[in-house]
Image 1 (cartoon, one colour):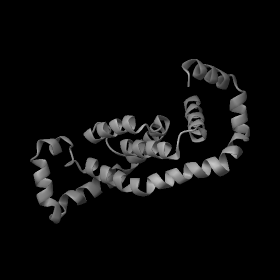
Image 2 (spheres, one colour; image 1 turned 90 degrees about the vertical axis):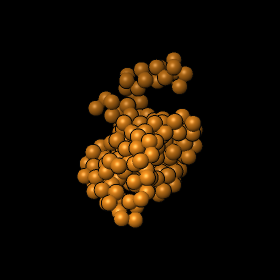
Image 3 (tube, one colour; image 1 turned 180 degrees about the vertical axis):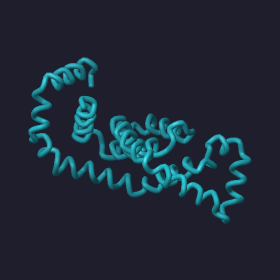
Image 4 (cartoon, one colour; image 1 turned 90 degrees about the horizontal axis):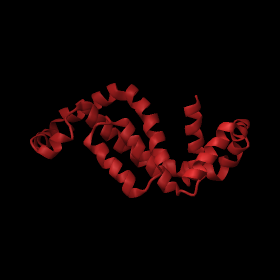
Length: 175
């Protein structure tokens, strides 16, 4: 429970921070991709490099990873079916065969139904996900942040010893 409260506090802090909505939305989308797909995949190494290069919000990456890992666990049978359907498409057989015979593409394990199905699903969800998350951050800052800060839960958290310890640790770390 304490860990969940810590992540909620970090999320609220990130949403209210000076990080741009693009950085927050980018972090969310990249975390979503990592969370939806099998973690030990080459494409996730590319995503981690993008996290570093694009300077997206790490907290949002972690949050989205945690949320979408749970969703992906439940959706794996759907990813398997979708990946199988993609791999069995008659019009794609030449492409799949050429990719399988290429060492680079073979190492991506694209031929695994769950890997292919989840990756394509995640990429498709990026298209509406990025702008929706960006707008959500903007709307949160504009209309919701003040109300959240006035809730009894946030006031109780701010008044707790845990919060003061958290603030002291962050000041020492320079965050």
